[in-house]
Every structure is written in structure tokens, then in C-alpha cells.
Length: 410
Image (cartoon, rainbow, N blue to C red):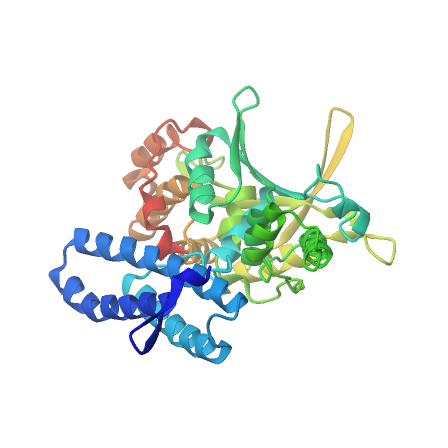
């Protein structure tokens, strides 16, 4: 597209340089606009800034490909531009999805959510013959209960990935990520944050993606649609299981949104004529992953559950039960004492839940606060009984205001 780059008199002035200068002027204006403390100024600023960002990246990338801009100049420009963008984002307290799809804030949460309620559907991810099948792409599917449709929709819109499939007759909602650019984006976001044996499925999906790029990048017969996809993705280095402390990021929040629940248990004491209110946080997952390791054994979830148990200061329990002639084996972590419940409170206050469980946590935390301020059960018993009528499976009222602060929360 040579017509976009031309001369003005004796000065060589590229379109991308114009965009860069426009960004610079906006950067200078930002403190003035921010000082007005008017939301509409900020909205106009962000909207125009995002538009200019898109134009900048599109044309700089395009012109660089056709040698319209000297590579050294582009590198220096990008370094300065990234620094400018970082300052702007810090000023607005945002955590956007970056140009390459990565985000070090939403990544841990999404990794935990997908490891809990997600599935990777991959056929022979390291087989080049699979890439030739035009009817097949790997999928990432995340299951939500129907009341969490607002969260599924929010994540879909926030990442600009996949589609929402509503299954009203089955009582759940699916977030399905299948197109290659969306698959790349989600894999890039969660790549370094997975903690369970399901990490191997993520790495197989990355293997498929890298083979797709390898097969098509130098293919002279590649279709325009394929070439457009290749402009938006790049090879990924598959990362191993994350062993950082549980409390170091929002992974535990995403995993809890998938596989945990909060309980307010009210019962009569057996030895006294009084009532007791007990608060529980419970996390339960299956014991083994379905893929067999090199030693012939199935990968266990125990190391992860042990790490969570150590963080909370509680014991990991093993549970077995039979349902319709099928046996299920799981590991369970339960927080019920004062110390572990305070850790739960601190963690989810720092890394909030995003599903409707956030509402259960807020009610649970309210009773915990009442307990800590007054140990006499009768002082908060009526409040606990009232909360239980609209809590967990009995909940009928929902408020999704917490999703509006996603940029600050994760």
C-alpha cells in the first residue's frame, strides 16, 4: 500500500509517523483532560487513543513488511510507543488485552477457570496431517451454569474471543473458543499460569498452533484468509506448570469460581440448648487426570491440593462415592476455622471471584465479620438465617456490578 507513504515537500513523512505524533499530542493533553475530572473527557480520550493505536500498529506492520520504513526506525518507535502506552494504562488503572493477546492480570484467573470448568479438544496436536483437515481446529470449551451467563458474555467480550452457546434445556452455558486467532489469544493469555496436569493439553494445543504456522508461513498457495490469520498470530513457547505461591496471583480465584462453594451452616448444638453458625469454604476436584504419565500412572491432583491446603493451613481429605454404579474419587479442602477463614477472606478480597459466587462470598464474609465483632451467636443469628434464604442454590437475586471493575480486580 505505497500510496499511504509519501513526501511533503522535501520532508519524508510516513503515515505511521503522523499517527505517532498524534499519539504524542494526546499524551501531552492527557494531564489537562484528567484534571477536568470529567468521565466524558476520559471516554473520548480512550476511544480516540484506541483508534489511533490500531491504525499505528496496522500500518507500521504493513509498511515494515514491504520495506516502506527503515527497520531501525520502527524498533525505536515501538520502544517509545510501548513506554507511552504503559504510562497511559497505569494512569487509568486498566489491564487491557495487549496487542499480542497477553495480559499478566487476567491470565491467572482464566487459567484457573479453564482448569476447573474448561476442556481442551485436540486431535493429534503434533500430527501435521491434522493441520490439513480444513474442518478441524482445536477447541477450548468453558462451562458455566446458566445464572453465570453474564460472566461468560463478559469474558467473551473482554477477550474478543469465541462465541457463547446457550443450552437452556441442560441448564448451562458454553463459551467456545475455536477460531485460530481466538485460540492463539487465549493460549497466550494462560500459557504461563496453569497449575494442574491439564497443562499438558494446553501445550498440545500450542503444538498444533505452531505446526499450523510452520505449514502455512512459507506456503505460496496459502489463501488470503490464512495469510490474514498469520498476520495476527505467532509461535508460542509452551510453558510448564506454574509452581509459584498460590497467593501470588488470581489463579485460585478462577479455580474456585469453577469448583468451590461457600456454606453457612446453622444447627442445634447436641450438648447445649443453643444454635451454632459455622462458615465453610469447600474446594473439591477429582483425584487423577485422565492422561497417563510416562511411569504408567495417571497424573494426580494431590500436589496442587496439597499446596492449597498448606496455604490455608488445613488438611487435604480423600473422598470416594458411588453414583449409578460409577465410582468417583476426589480430593477436598475445607476451610472452617478462624485462621483459614481469615485467609480466605484476605485472598478473595485481593483477587475477587467473578461469577455469582462473588455474591455468596460477600454474604459469607459479612457473617464472618459479625462473628468476629461479637462472638454471641444470637447477635447475628437472624441475619444468617435470612441470608441463607437467598444463597448458593437458593439464590434468586443477582447483581453484576463487580464485573464493571474487572480492570481493577484482576
